[in-house]
View 1 (cartoon, helix red, strand yellow):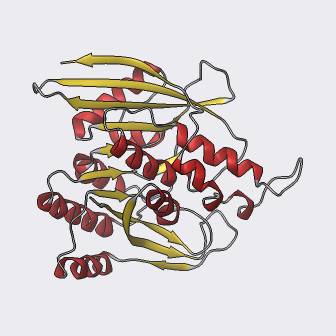
View 2: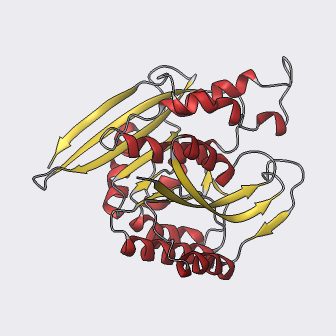
Length: 304
């Protein structure tokens, strides 16, 4: 059985973010990917210069209508990332609702890209759209700490706060929540970042069981763009293959490690944006067979 993903994200000509970051690993792992590019830029906006076009809600609807008219609008997964326009995001919501109606077992993976490190990099008026319309439709949600705080109105300063915030996000709709990064101190020292995950599973008898995990990810002294988009795609793939096991953090670390081998700046020099692009093609074998380099520890399991 083919498994088909509709991915609505940004596109760059050069480099890897959005659809460019998500499509190749999904294809390598056996998924058919249909891409709609929310923006088409020459490169990501971390470079000194960038040019390009932004897709409007009307243009998105036109593309979707074409798919629908040909009766090929059946999807197993939807994956969404960066969007900076209210009408576009609301059109995405309408499409997701329609596709979920056509296939009730469709899984929606949402990366609610709004900001990081205490600052929003999309207009503030997108927050209520994400909170009230997008998140309730999501099955899998991958916010960073700042985005999780925005969505719930709760600050995270301890592991207990993080668990409470993930529970609040579950109440909004998603069965699986992964906080892709946090400012929490790692028990393994300041060379590690802490990511957390929570999954609610309905057992055959109708009761719920939930699993909470914590992952220590080795820090890298550089800012790589596109890793969040890659992580959401890999999470989609690994939860498809292992639906009842959230311990999927291992694959992201390999791509960063592989990247470091390709850094061209030389000792003591800051790499340029071009040198920090993900090396996706060179990582193909690792995407297919990741070495387990990140250990997830289970925080709690509970049934109710």
